[in-house]
Amino acid sequence: MSVEGQGRRPRADVRRNRAALLEAAQRHFLKYGVGTSLEAVAKEAGVGPGTLYRHFPTREALLAAVLQTRSEELVARREAIARLGDAGEALRQWLRAVEEYFSAFNGLPEPLIAAARAQEPGNPLTLPCDHLIATTDEYVRAAQRAGQVRPSVTGFDLFLAASSVAWMMGTGAIDAESLGRLRGLVESGYRQPGDAE
Amino acid sequence: MSVEGQGRRPRADVRRNRAALLEAAQRHFLKYGVGTSLEAVAKEAGVGPGTLYRHFPTREALLAAVLQTRSEELVARREAIARLGDAGEALRQWLRAVEEYFSAFNGLPEPLIAAARAQEPGNPLTLPCDHLIATTDEYVRAAQRAGQVRPSVTGFDLFLAASSVAWMMGTGAIDAESLGRLRGLVESGYRQPGDAE
DNA sequence: TACGAAACGGATGCTGCCTCCGTATGCATC
DNA sequence: GATGCATACGGAGGCAGCATCCGTTTCGTA
Image (cartoon, rainbow over all chains, first blue to last red):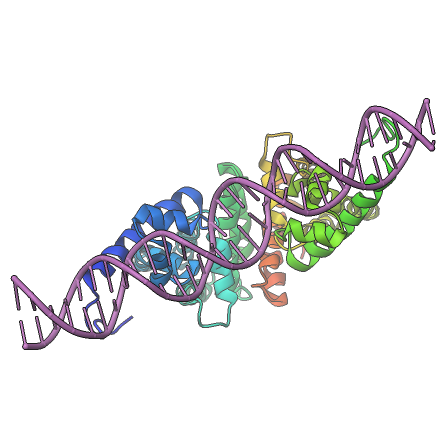
């Protein structure tokens, strides 16, 4: 990731196909969720199924590649959030950002959480996931130092809470008001008692 | 549901097959989750796929039938819980019971929540689900009357929260300690501030 | 015992997954 | 510009699961 340009540049058709696949996959994930037919993705990208599987051996690999852009956006957002003075507010906004990330496609929380648990280093979603957890933990510690979050809470806990909320959103069972109350539930759960609302 | 024995008694093979299917389905749901192969269930029950689909036209119908027993257990538990004096503790225990119900099989929260949302009366999971929500609301109101739960919280909210927790449990990503903290998060979220822990 | 209604069950068509290998293509070399 | 080869393509094919349909069997009754 940090070292660019190892080996020679890929062939032109490889780059073209990869780009077409990513674009088609993004469209399909948006429209039909992460469980969409990969054959359909390949067809829409104008390549055969073999080509898709050569580029992205598993659904998770394709998903990770498609999420790459959004992960970068999240990092950018992280820097903007960090500039906020208030640690509690920063944590709040970060958790919202994580929720949004999880809600990018329908059904995304499942593979993401599975990757967070996985010890198999083969899963390409594990890396971004662990990164998210580590970052959440930083925000939590900062907010704890500022006395705004209970000491017992961990970044992992809030990461899980955010995924749960995102999952709930994805089911479509929750309206805006209930969602707000659910978030409020979690927030008042991790906040240090006695802190002003 | 309330009126028994409409029409004549079903044929012997019908009863036998239905029972065999339910037993096989329960085993498979336990072992492989709600997404298990229905063909495999039929085979293990010793019937053809046609027979399975005649008895249970959809996966949800089969699931609802298998859950019947557990729903009844939940009702029984409800009565035991109601005997508790403390409304807050009763709510807490009820929510745990709902969580357990949701955790009966891997992947159960999805179809259950989908059924709760559904307006289509065709879904056989809608009825037990709505029942769960209504009951949760009763507990919430009682606890609110006792001043133990914030007035803004609804039974539906806590029903959703319980499903989220159950979903999280089902992913296997959460250890016992994190689970306890997640529950604590929700609890301290709905509790009336100022109430003793 | 015989009959008719009801249920059975497997063959069937369909979709999606993933792999394998004969063929096509891009790129470096001459 | 032509040539050769490594690399990538892509679709045929095997497999699994879903859901249906209909010829055959079974049950209960008369």
